[in-house]
Amino acid sequence: MRGQLQHLIDISERPNVRLQVTPFSFGGHSGESGSFTILSFPESDLSDVVYLEQLTSALYLDKREDVTQYEGALKQLQQDSPGPAESRDLLRGLLQLS
Image 1 (cartoon, helix red, strand yellow):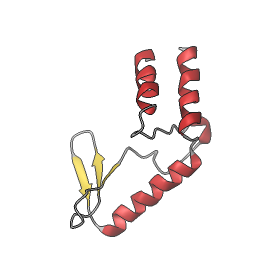
Image 2 (cartoon, helix red, strand yellow):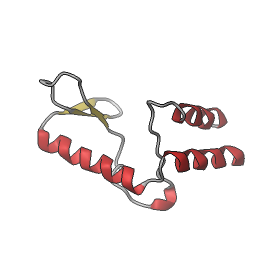
Image 3 (cartoon, helix red, strand yellow):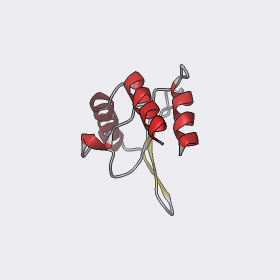
């Protein structure tokens, strides 16, 4: 686990990465039902898509109302979670404990 924590810390220092960690102490949140990825494309004629990975399959959501709901969930998670610097500090603290 130490290697994974260190990797997250290292990756979080890259300029093109924004890593935020929601601590368990926060309680329930909109992302706890599973991970999701919002895929955005540079081509203006391609709409954003939500990618849901499951144990034996994957699901792509391309309806605008679905994508909007996931965008709202992501925005809420970003607002509720410690910022990138604080998240990095949290990971460093966990690394010291392990």
